[in-house]
Image: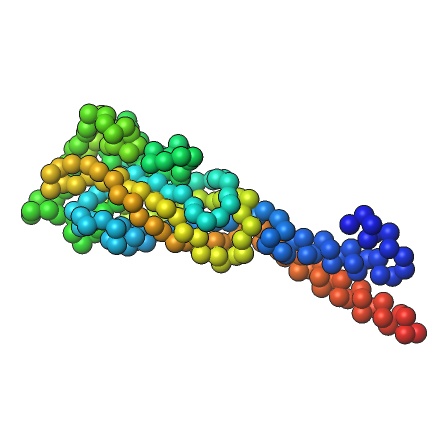
Length: 239
């Protein structure tokens, strides 16, 4: 860009504007930050297509990893944050199902009260409510894939509208891009009772964060300014 700034005559300023503008608006020219989110209802829909026991299960941990894109984990927001006693944590953790890291949403090991994600219309099994049932395990598999050794009483279901959200940065994609996430869910199955995990996929829409929107807006503004300067330059030359 320094060479363009020293172009002779009136062409210097418009071309500098255009270059900076293109760097701002071209998705492939710079790394951007995007917000992704899904509700409990969307999660249950994904579980329905992957888990044959989804009507009887309570999910207590969710793991997600983007596929097919470059990214860096940025922030995570819990669907049920503290100070609730049965809150869920949101964090980045070592991938318990493979290499690298994954997003993790789930209960904590030391909780005595637990919220689970479950299908609202079938949260009864053989006529007995699963609410207020306490559960613990031997520590295998290790928490967070496993429930944990602390006895936890299930006191509520996650609200259908609860929002799981996170941001990823360093992504060279366009706003509105559909990104597929490979997921795993840890579940407690009350017909036994037993616990296990299953794989699923979730496709989410990339929503630009405010800093990305500002960058795109700056690019558009600079392009407009460059167009105006070029028009004024032509008129001056015609005189």
